[in-house]
Length: 249
Ligand SMILES: [Fe+2]
Ligand SMILES: [Fe+2]
Image (tube, rainbow, N blue to C red; front, side, top):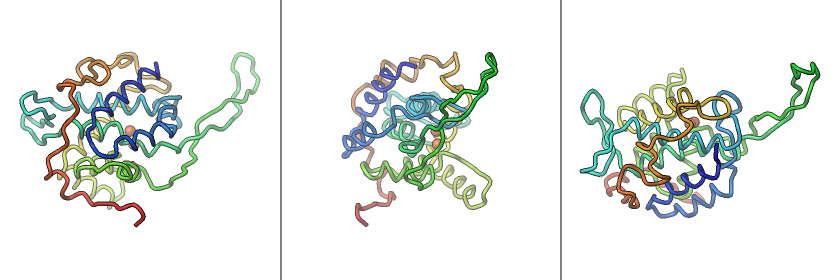
């Protein structure tokens, strides 16, 4: 993967977000290991830059899952031929690119002995392991980190919070299911996250079919299938339910 190209695309996409505090959020990201961290310790994109690639993959998967309406300028989540939700372009970008920001300052490398099949000798090899410096969970932690810098609309908050879906616990699954009904963006993000990690990504790079992003979802680094203009802030009504978190409280 060409990491510099991925960084350019990530920053071009985030550069279109027109929301107070996004400059500070970008400083946090640039000062963290977001651009170098893996996406997982094993399984999908367990490699340098994996988190960055995964975040862009989820953006492509999410845009591919939705239908952009050039008349209204928003994405539609169509279910069985009906529009289940209209989602502003900046919500799509924020939910996808920031859903796993909880993985910053989260991974570290350690050494282990691995047998070299050719020489039959044991060799030390680095591997990724977890050293969670902010142990606050996963989806909720991503939402908390983003909220330190910018406001989130209620659907964005729910989407990031519940992007891991059902996990077999009664309380989690009840709340996740209810959130998907209230805010379909949450279900779309969960689906796009699964599409990226299960269908697009191999252990150390994207699968061949997804080696290059589709022009239908990526454009040329930031020119999405909208106008390329900065996304307008969402209407006032989108913000009402979002709880405000004051610094220092
Ligand atoms: Fe995640
Ligand atoms: Fe993810």
